[in-house]
Length: 415
Image 1 (cartoon, one colour):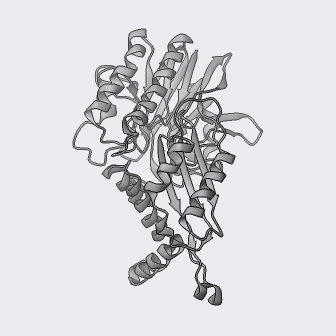
Image 2 (image 1 turned 90 degrees about the vertical axis):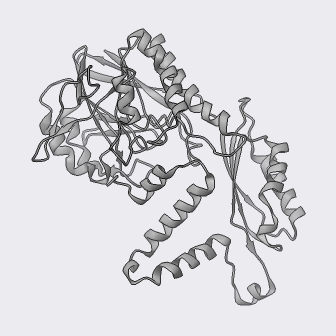
């Protein structure tokens, strides 16, 4: 039996109200289309998706239609697409059918989701083709179980998961991160909490974090695999390998091979403008440093660019406007999308006397700290709430999130 394991596709992701919106939207569908084409060419028995097929739970109708179009070749080829829900796939109001459930009922995916008994135990019912629901499916002797995203308490559920499975040659789809390896800060479990899964499952197909990693038993045997996202979703992923796992099951053993995809180029650069006395000097510094650092690898696609400006300068940081910088960057690297973080600090005579050197970011954090500590009910949680406030601000400023994703920041466990 052979299958392809991918995760965190994030269909529907884009930069809203930006000239790059449609092109970036297409990137994620092109990535999934390429994986579907590989699935057919390799003649594997299944494509498994470890969660976050979509970027948000409440997707646009055009995203749903485009998803069906992209998955149609798999359906025509008779190759099942087996999926679980990630935290981004969730809808917080469950009075209506979700898009994932609709895809499953229409036969484009097989959505695996366990049932729960009255005492909290798991029950992995066989997948029902009529209802499009179930927790377990068997393909060529391999038993595939699906769990999805269950939040920060995932580690406490491992024993009940293992108890519910009594078959052999088992594969588990689980949208969860492992602390120490996962680059995300929510929805993880400890390494020691995950180890019992190795006794019940020969292959644990992880998702959630966008960085690839492999988890081993104490004896050094790999058993859990996170392919990361096949396309670069957020800034910070520019150095991660991007791809998926091609897995063969032979003689009772799962044999995975990581295969690279071709994500859009992403550049994250810190530009030190310290000592610049005016805006013109600062712009010249940006040009000089960008030209020296940007490596044109032959990829003709426009890169995604994040620019962090640092240093003490002799002019007010706000004078270095975003639109002026964008015009300069357009000539140098022609980025598809630019995000600029202005961490410049202003040098003044009083600063030099008093030793004060505060950036805009530091001033922002001080203001938030003062506001939060003014409420007695928030004492002891200042740092946590400051990080949350800044995360919400950054998400809104980027313009690529909706209400559900902002709600997920406030409620990471989906309560």
